[in-house]
Length: 638
Image (tube, helix red, strand yellow):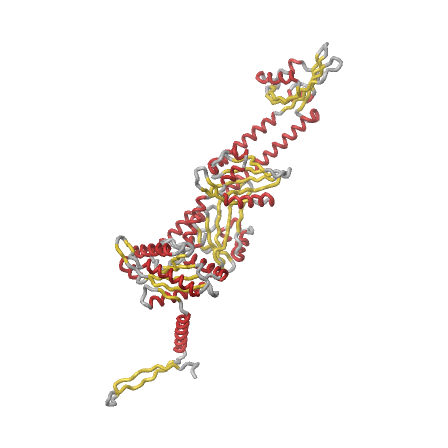
């Protein structure tokens, strides 16, 4: 993204009416971007705000963003005491892009959470984008809180297990024994069992009273346990004498008879708190699912086990909409997600994920997925990994659809590097491609050619028929030029009625390369000499073409363009509708004339020009006038 979206770009020559329209479209596009965009320039060691789009002006937390020229510390006033200012200065001075999340909190409240990026767009300017990450930060906090709650539940469950194993040594657990002999049956309760059952402390308990608190609908469970005596755990509800219903877990073990005496033992644990915790856990999971169903993406928990196996332990229902797969499919085999990713994007996705897990650094990756209906969408996933006590690595992540953002970026790039009228590469993109072509030609020794094309008498068309007709002609000329060259060649609109064609991969010998370039130029001449249809009327236009070769010596881009331009003017001087190659002698003549003009101006300033008058007489030797002669007393003359 370039600063041309926020500042007013200069209108190219010949586009007096198109300039404001293009600027308006650029500004409207920038204001339509839902991401805050701001451009800063380094002035006197301080970053000053140049411009900001509508999203930046609406974003809470940004300071004097409506006032161009203010210091960056006033725009990011809530972050003025953080390293952000120095980081932004570093982007301007070093050129390394910045991507970070800025979070400011106060007790009990999140002030701001921003995903901030900064990139240098000129030697002294940077573009800063700010995206509100409040929902993501709140989700992260909610996930962290849920994780803490889950860990607390696990801790309580472990403690309850220890209570069960150590029986009377810990609270809320008791045991009983029933001793059966041919003469009588005795039932003994421990003090701990009496306490959880709500009975007074007693050792001997009547058999009927021992089961009196079990709710009628649960008695069949306890009866089956007592009859089987296989040591299985069962849970049932117990109503205490005070009316409170508690959940109990019981295990019965029947010992082998000895001397005719049968002993049956059981352990009972009050697990009411455990049931409540499980219910709270279910409510928390439902709460997370409700949150996940309302965010524009899906969340997940990915675990890499110590043995190298991986699994997705949770993924929200939104994966059905965003990836076209069911959540149950992903938890059963997370490989179904990778099958949706385009094959050419999978290697980078895997590599970046592995680096994140191994180094325990936040992960962010953009990739494309193919939906079941065949459409291709752009996704961006973010995840934060951490290591569990058992050595496994758990990543909590969030994936969102960024297709519209990608389309906006492509449109921005098109407007920045392509001509809005013809769709051809503009001057900026041409200069970049020409610089690369020069380097390639010097390396491969394959020559290239630059054809500078100017439409003859184009101004007359604009003045007589109007700029609308002129625009139609420029569009048709562009189409013909593109159709007359190879796909690998570049056709660019240089400005106004000027076009440039760059040919690459010509023969390494100058004569052969010149012949190839001349063939293309003549083809362009023939194509542009055909009549044009302008609103149903035929119109004839002719071009003047200047040609120069490159690749046999190292030349600057400006020098190449100057040579092609000079050859084009030579074609105009030769009568127009023709082509001319750049001639070094022609360049020398132009340089000599420029040098002479410069010396004449200096001679005038130094009074080196002297006027002499020579009388003019008729045949009778009568004075009838005078000739004025100017002599230059040049300092370098002998």
